[in-house]
Image (cartoon, rainbow, N blue to C red; front, top):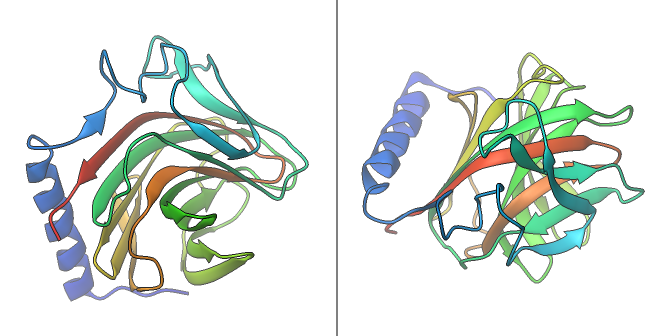
Length: 210
């Protein structure tokens, strides 16, 4: 189980504040010409695996519509967003785990390149919050013990990748604060596992200075 010192918490909060300050300078979020506006047809996204589509979802931010991954036989389901690649980036998204017997997860993919990537994910069926890397297989970097996010409710995910420092938040609580340098740049995306039926909306991407 990952533990976090007071100093690490301050570092995480400071990094988040700096990223929010940078938001006004350069960001991608839902707007009239933005791929994260799910009230319009999905354009520019690349499905790596899974069954992804825009659907009506209760509580969704964009006229009641969100990007939904439906259950598939694939072990991992990934869709990559337009834009990038990014080396240093802050990504925020809401996810709503709706159903799943084996898994009910949602995650943010980052530094995706040639099928390799990092992912921070939460699971409504498990009491943990985890950072993995994927390179012809999934490998856990760190885990934190949490109360599982409730099924059928919206939750906020956030990641920050700045150099080799990777941080992750669930519902505005910093839970991951690690250093890992195996991947240094790539695109961002969304992730689920196995039979998860999960909705995503309110995606914001903020490139950061190195």
